Length: 129
Image (cartoon, rainbow, N blue to C red):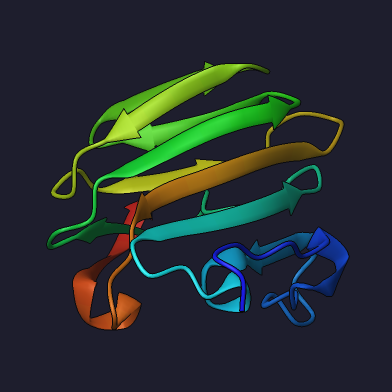
């Protein structure tokens, strides 16, 4: 038995189904007990603009933009974040992201692991009309 897990990203299931891009929730695939980690690739004109936002009851999130420029809406603030930019979002802040650029955006999202992600999230309809 080992105290570590090595897993190529390609072996982590993409949870987006027919939605464009990829979202690979790494946490369960590697058996992480404390940390939640998600890798996401967003093609142009994808994300939350024109739909809902979400907040959390307990989860602080850290976003790290690896490639491209991502537009964030945090509360009433809208701004762009480019490569090598980190964004910390407190649990109660309503948030959404959208790729307004002409190229893919790649990002990583990290937080504390919770047993029931859906129970920790609150959805906010019509957040980013």
